[in-house]
Image (cartoon, rainbow, N blue to C red; front, side):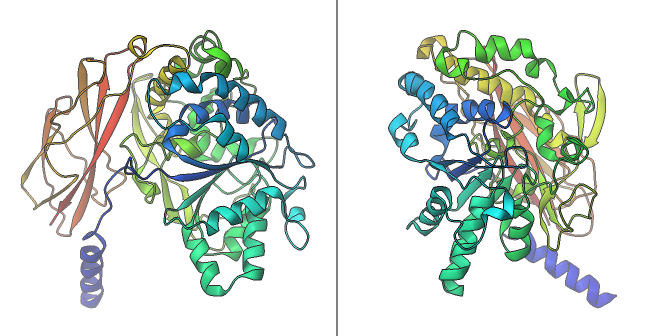
Length: 471
């Protein structure tokens, strides 16, 4: 027992010695490839409209039309091109508000097509496609940054790319490509996802495993559905419903927001079920892409092997980044709610307002639109302290490009760290908050989120994360 305690203490000390800070550096945009079964239902087109308003946050390496469980024998790349044509019209206006929006010609040249076959029927000898070859080319590019593949539909063209690399590359080179790859997939929309996780056990993979069992029942359990999941007959309590209503979407997105907004279709089943995959990567100061357990607009995930459920394609044989639970207070019903969906809907008002502002950018001049605040701290993003010490959390030098007034909110993100204690934050709604470091007898990490919101229309929020290491 003493040896076990010693090992545990040493492990915790080593584990918490080096901790990545929050967010992705602005100068290092994530490389992104989108796989979309667009036109299986309206939500992929909805997500693509939003994705393009954030296209300057990414190095878009490709948009690939794929199949899925709902679109088994064809692809619909034509719909991607329709929406890109609308983006072409608004891109010059978007550039008035932020830099680096890619050109229409660049995005058009990177739009590719996967094989029109379902799942593993499109993986193996003779199953190459324009999409799978494009993924291989991106993985082989001389670029040290990870390549994020965001699977809104079936990922079999990614599976084909990995199958071909395994056949033709040395074990050393294959490992190099796998180490560069990051996958965030919206459930399993074909059987190639489970095959990849089983075949390549070290592949970085974010997913709620499974498919639509008994209609769409399996999707109710997925973290991503927290983006607007209470549209499913009001099953998911908590979160602001007004900002996902048809009326809100019509007023803030579809009407009077130019040709890109006009391409946003009416919601049929679930608003933008694929959007969390790229909300996760937006550089807003909230999350850390290499740490899904830190949480972001795209949800929070933990690394473990999930138990088999009836809606899985097959039992999971390895850990992956999957559902995590947050306990969140909802201003809507003045109650606490616990669940994996809460890891997304807790941010819903902020990410919906942010989308609405970017749709304004499509048609308005800089002076007529709102822009997000700039957040700064008076200290480093990692603070070291000892048990019983008072810790100051301080925002300093925050600003707003439009001269708007700013409000502050500090939140203790209890689920992310290893402390079991609830903390009482003093002055949580001020630029400077404080707390007393709790005593556990072992090293602790405590995670805090500073949210800074302007009073513009719509109100926009940006963040800073602070990690407190308690010796």
